[in-house]
Amino acid sequence: MRLFLIIIFIFYSSNVYANRLELLYLESEIINNNRESLYNDPNDIVIGNQDAKITIIEFFDYNCGYCELALGDLNDLLEQNSNIRVILKEYPILNDNSYDLSKLSLAAGFQGKYFEFHNKVLLLKGKVSYDNAIEVAENLGLNINKLEEDYNSKQVNDMIANNKVLGYSLAVTGTPAYFIGDVKLEGAVGLETLQEVISFVENGINVKDYIVELARGGDSEAYKVMVRYGLF
Image (cartoon, rainbow, N blue to C red; front, side):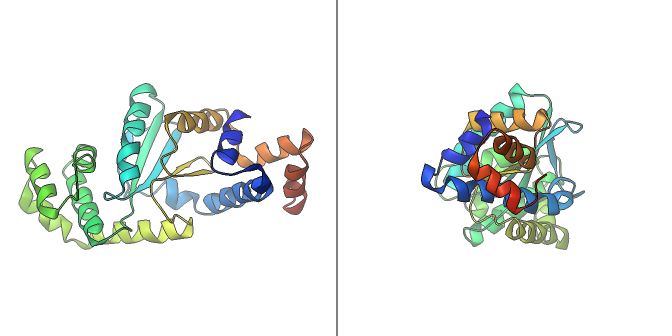
């Protein structure tokens, strides 16, 4: 049970435990209602083991300092666990420059260099301009004419628009935001917490099961949530 105790208490004091527990359940329902778009969008670029049982979704913005900090966690997960796949959802919400970088990133993906481009751009210091990103693309050996053509394509615009609609549907108001199974994690939560959630999902436990188990173990707040939403 340590996983969700981390999730519930890491950012919240005990006096809002009940609200957090209910939110955990409601978030899981929203995720389940959007599961196909979240985990099985055919336009997404999959990183890691294509056939892995566990998928990590990250909504991110290239101008997000916390996304830069969290990049190492994601790379460590991919290195340490061969049974995960990662899908990065371009979610430019900070400024127009973020939107330009997301479009270039997806365009780089059309040439098979998505994750390489992602890592290098996200780790550039200071505000990254369009020209800075083009330099990265050149250093990766990309065809710049094709890159800029794809950058301006309807397909790229539609991919980002779909991510924005999905993100708003899932109440993603900041980055990074992770989704693993039916669990939503907000912020740069760290490698240990990500690993805990992965372990939980690998064991086939979902949020509903967790709340029911807490309730049956005598947790009064979990029991209230169980009764309120008919989790029997």
